[in-house]
Length: 287
Length: 244
Image (cartoon, rainbow over all chains, first blue to last red; front, side, top):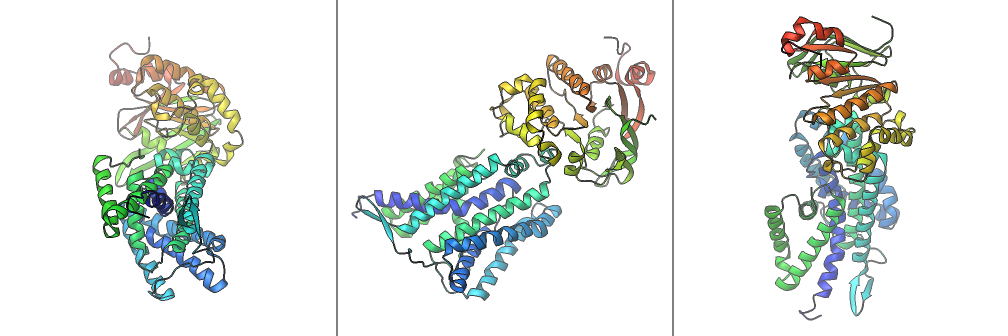
């Protein structure tokens, strides 16, 4: 690969963008519905990675198969967090849930330290080192899986939000809480479901992330940063916008790394985020 | 009072935090009638509707619907029982299509099975909504948005409909159309409690009315009789009242 070849970083960026979108979808959804910036989102994703790691090392489950167990667990945990922590915090003030989220973040980080030690872990599978080729170029298979998972979860969430009663109720509550209540929607419960569904997507994101990059108990912060970048580009609350935001961020990062060196690739991401924030603060696809 | 009372509000006090908005208010709504609440801004009309809808709860007194005390129920339980509110300012879901707004109106369990039947009825009342069913709701005109808000309320398959400031900001010709629609809704057997600031118009349309002043019931009675009350004449009109 000579330095004039931009196809390889471009494809890598697009595939990586699918993973970024996957990480960001839950953050986007919780913000869209509850106007809550969930500072714990990155740690919840990492919790999903550790859930996959635990199931793999203890039960010998393939991480993707392990999702059958971790998704329902994360759903239940999400519902409980909303019902017993966030819901009560919302009743106090609009800032309180932010502090609760920060607290959850610290609790998860430290619990993971105790359970799994601070060592770096990875979800290594039999197919981790496989690659696929487009023309003469080789790409890691896990990147393709990331991208496919991103598309599937994004489409599933979109269909859910626009086609089912519960999904429409979540959308309605996000657009006008009072009117939603007057339509017979139990908004407290709907918020619980929204948070739980965001956690399900975090469980999926965590597993694919762990198959792609190594993770530690404190990785959540950098994943939160990526998720923020993605939703700022795409627009908070829009599933499709979040997906495209992830792709743009992925491409910017890999192309930036290609032309300016890998040391500055995150710098370019931040510059793009700042430019979009100043030019179009609602994001490219935000309302 | 006659025994066909559908909703009986008895001596309620309601607070917004520490501010008392309603003082010992009692209102009876009879089955099948069109009852109006009249009063200036901050007289407590919206507070009363929001209390019936369960968004607020009375600190004292009771609200009975079909013989059951509903004063402490949550909004979704109240909708389930058959009370729906068309809120002030319409509050349609701006980024959803017209049709999706209507579908979400049938969210409560009791209304879901009647969804297609009720959508048909709404389109009969408001043919314009059918023409625009795919359109995003925020792009509708003010009058059409109000039709959508009423239609969405009908989707809950209500026994009692609370309508807040329906004609606010709309052209007279649109207001006429909306009141004609309300008449037809009433003919379907749905009881209507509506709030208006336009006293003259309201007394023409309603069967009975209550007049609220600073959170208290000042007067109540048949709409036609209230027109003749000196107090009403002085407070709300010049001299000639409900003639035109």
